Length: 425
Image 1: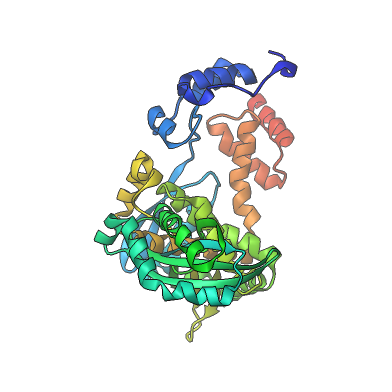
Image 2 (image 1 turned 120 degrees about the vertical axis):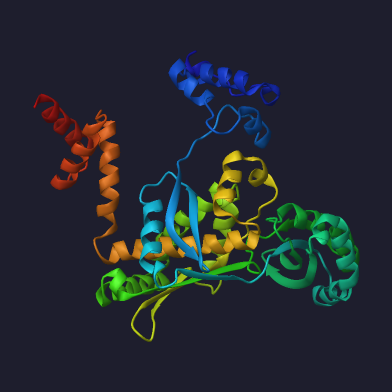
């Protein structure tokens, strides 16, 4: 089929079976049978289950699941499942955890399991007075919210508070009502969205305005996970390394260009555990980055300082809206396995562990930057990828990679030349 005549308007595509869809896509894109067969192999995720999780399924994207060792969180030894395609991430957590293990590992806490739903009202004639009218209805609001989810109530969750804000916007003042809801072991999006929907017509009535958006906020700053650890100097290589790490943190705290990459490194660890447990990586990332800018300046999610006896002290605090029930967490077999490996029985425990992983990841990244430079560790693994791209197999991969790193030129053309030399010899 020539590209000029390809048509992406495919009626009824969503009603076809995944196998039929894959056949159509293969024909459309001119995929060979080997590529098509590879897409048809969905690994540990049953094709029918995949088809129920999202729309228009043709296959699955398999990502390596690694295990970080050495983690001690609140006195408990853990193995941490991490789903990621980036090299060095799992090793970084293992190394950071090993270096603070004897000093007690990670200590964590959580501010609660509260989520926020927002209801936006516009064209409110007297927004400040209307704000008070809504606040006066607290008991009615509680009854309406708690009526939405009897199961949540049974588990000790439900409505906790209402806040009303008058926001100056480009379109004039808006009245925004926040429902603060304890969602317990659920991430809580469905629960709070339902409550916002239920409440919306009442808000319109009380304020005399028009209600538009009613949706959760991913800036879950009532659901903060915190972790802290101390790294003794003899474990990390002395005062110079400690000072280098603190200096790198100071750079991130002062400069958004550095902070973006610094926090991305934290999320390498966090998102890997969030993904492994079937939770929403985008929700957690959005909350984290928004929280990093809460003071009007985008900065670091972690802090590093010196203890009174000279050790390195690190801490992290960020929103962590993850759950154990609902969505992929409940039905994806790998997510279920990951939760069993972690042995968690509450969303709060999971959130606290994830925060500790983020701190560990950040420690390792800053230590690498402060010592060898991160490129060196990355290069060794990158060189293996380049060697494979050049056609190296089996034992050759390590040998070619090592030569590339020694020469300091990790490029495919160089890899091909090295491979030919090795094979010629």
